[in-house]
Image 1: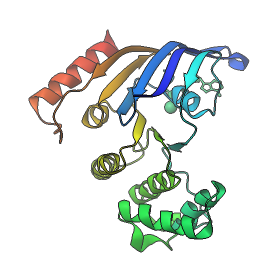
Image 2: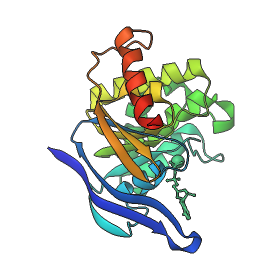
Image 3: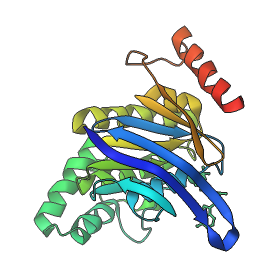
Image 4: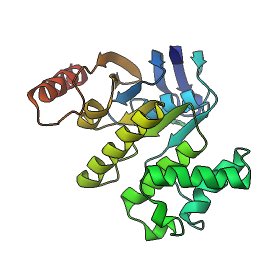
Amino acid sequence: MTEISLKDISKVFKTVKVTALTDVSLEVEKGEFFCLVGPSGCGKSTILRIISGLEKPSSGEVQAPKEISMVFQSGALLPWMNVEENISFVCKANGMSDLKAEEQTTKYLRMVDLEGFRYRYPRELSGGQRQRVGIARALAIEPTVLLLDEPFSALDPITTDELHTYLLKIWKETQKTIVMVSHMLEEAILLSNRIGIMKKGEIKQIMEIKLKRPRSQGSNEFLKTLEEVKKVLIG
Ligand code: ADP
Ligand code: MG
């Protein structure tokens, strides 16, 4: 079943005369883990913003569920609220009762192993922990689709590995549709069912990643896939 459908999407930012996207078409299946890759400025974030409804396309058709959560690179936690408040506040803003908001907060803090950190403030957390709170918060409103915009690019490699494990666990447990943007090809190959390879506002190729899970970055098949993706990006 198709969860998200983009048909011939173009986006022009008239004020700066930039064409960010040209005729982008894409269908993401329910429960799929889809990754958009490509160099900085190629239009990845613009696609996510169009899927989320934050941005309107200049032309083309978008179909996506309304219940969408987005996770940003920074985690975007409110510094004056503790971990619990950061999550429950978003739940309440989405119409949940105090009790339901508390239940959701506990459920998803448990999922990212941060129950013991409920009363900490963002400044008292590591970058990886902050991002785990950001993911818990995004899930707490029970979105149909989870969008992630380079969520791990500010983290060190070891923390990034750890967060990949969390994300895969969450994907398996919740069976959410995930669309993630990354500029790290290895990350995209490690996580996704399919990769959309972008260049200058276009999706050049959509590649299915058939590697068995759990995937290992050192395997021959993995490196072969990496070479194939690179070839599309360079060619
Ligand atoms: P990516 O996420 O792949 O780095 P973006 O989608 O952020 O790329 O940007 C694609 C292009 O659109 C870039 O040239 C960027 O400068 C431009 N752009 C993005 N958002 C805006 C905006 N709100 N106003 C003007 N130009 C924008
Ligand atoms: Mg971006």
